[in-house]
Image (cartoon, rainbow, N blue to C red; front, side):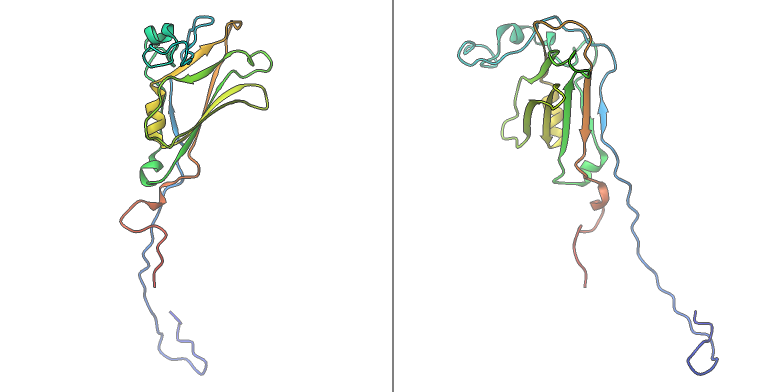
Length: 198
């Protein structure tokens, strides 16, 4: 309402009403990690090793027989404790091309945990574009990094194993970090995201 102001004199008030369409979007929700807080027990030196020459007739091919025959000894977590680790993110459902990154670290203290063991994925997903790498971080701790689709990472968690070092005995925490790579749910709804209008 202009309250009747003009550049010459007072006139009748003029007004205009407009309706603006707005869209309220949620804040980026953090990923959810489903994992048990129970203490996991593993035998010293129990491990899964791939050697395609030595174990060419095992199932799966290349896996050492002790791991193949008794898979639950190294499974993370053991079935008696709970289900495999899983990751959720409500924003991923709204982002068709959204990926996430999961970092799993064995141990916390250096140098005590530098030889505490490592993770191994016993199966791979065919035709997957998931990125997998394992390396010793600057602090000396081993970490496994998976980057890709959330559902593919969750599938691999059913085949996650922990290899206990031959010389290590004691406690060593598993640290799990899930990152959503800045994917958020703004692009959900009945519209085309990022489209211009004229």
